[in-house]
Image (cartoon, rainbow, N blue to C red; front, side, top):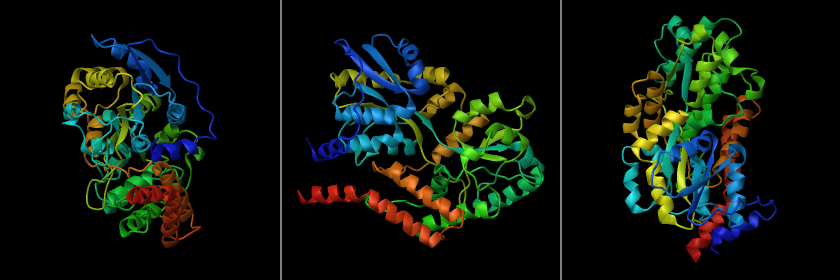
Length: 416
């Protein structure tokens, strides 16, 4: 057992192991999937003649991450499956997944570079994008028009000026922007737009005290200081759709899953009054994080060749089109966007522009805990309970503490 696996399994001893799935027949591939993809995967597989039998195990997103880790510790992972992009570094670190075979790497040609980069750990591609997402601005087009803007401007300075005018148009008691303080994605995107690296080059220490992140945190704080965004968490917003409809806020940063909600939940008379736009940046279109899900083959696969063959079939253009039709997912390949009409639809086309400006996040297993601590401190900064200088030092301190084991393992590896 390698060092990463021993260390990881030792840390799981206090966790109850998830019960394994029913034993599958010989010649059957076990596929774990989540959400709408798990629901629609049987119908999608039915369109693929000549594939092995596949046993689909649906997992709820809320429990999937722990299920994967406990199953790894119990040697009961499936042959292949869907994983969130942010989990790939962790699965690679514990040696749970196989690298993508060289023959399948051309499947990434024509895909969004930042998403592919998220799946590359070191110099090895460890997963293949299945669908993509990112966050951008959903905005009230009618209120921006009344303020004199056809769309949100692309630079921070102009964007903030526009938000002040939109807030004035919306009327007393309203704001321009909703950025709940308990959601780290907003500050993360602003930081990436400012060119912040967030961690140092080898991912062993925080880089929050760097000038780029300080600038991002100052801009983030100014949006609350200037009362463009309410100082509130998401639990304090009773109904996002009602508040967006009445103009309590005119810009709502979110992802492609919100498109359906806008169409279903907004009143009929507002259906032509909303649109999407990429985030602003210091000098032009801003950055965002590349999200979505990817397909992996686990080291536990009984027939890795058959598992990779199925992955290749699922990433064929015709199958991507079918998945998009079944789920509404955004495909990872640009040519499929054109074939499905996504590039011709202004609502979805903005997501392609935003993905073109996306940047991969640090690829360390501890990242989700680090970014949560970043946001905890950022909330203190926004609420005036600490300064920007003290805040970034505290973020680095917390990140360094979480990365202590990573530093030890890297030093141990160098010394062995």
